Image 1: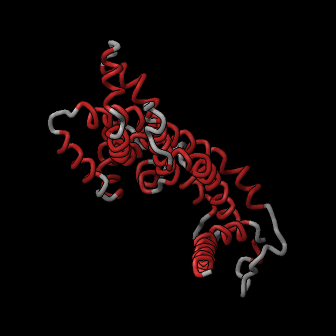
Image 2: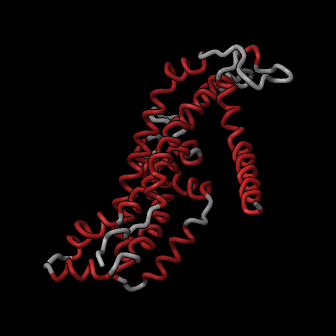
Length: 273
């Protein structure tokens, strides 16, 4: 009985905490359905009593190019991060290069540099190279955040790969690249999903790099597109919140689909007893 009572208590506490954390999401949806004339109503309606879809119509009419740019930047960041981070993680985990420990420390320190500091540095570099207001410039900038994280994740995951797999591949005549491509990468599927997910989410939600490096270009992501509805004397809050809801959907879907890969063990079933 005591065990059941304690379990129910923890369940109730968990539900309350979940409701508190999800309330901003609910309020975002509520405001996105609220007519513009009811925005300053006091007290506000807890439910959209007179729902309107004008905000979502505005998203479909105005925000689709921004969403497409964010998708392009997110996928490009994922590809560039995987291309750089996966081989680097394999080298640090299995090839043990000289200075690998120092490199790992450098990657850890790189994660601590504030984004605004990096954005200022990128601005000067991109100005000289002519990469300002370009989508590939944002891919490069976002990858500088994702690559160090990806290298550390791949290193940790690949360190757990049994040495017997690597040795068996070498006995069969596979070189380092063939071993990495045909043996290590398939076993590291969960690491690939994890790094891809976080790389995409970072690029999708980036504002600092986008506002600094692409504030006036034609290829602006959704984090800047939302400012289309914000002016000095006018804020279209239902359109703003509708844009936020639509922009949140890809991230939510990816998190739901990828959670079991992120949580799963990397080498489960790789070696038979």
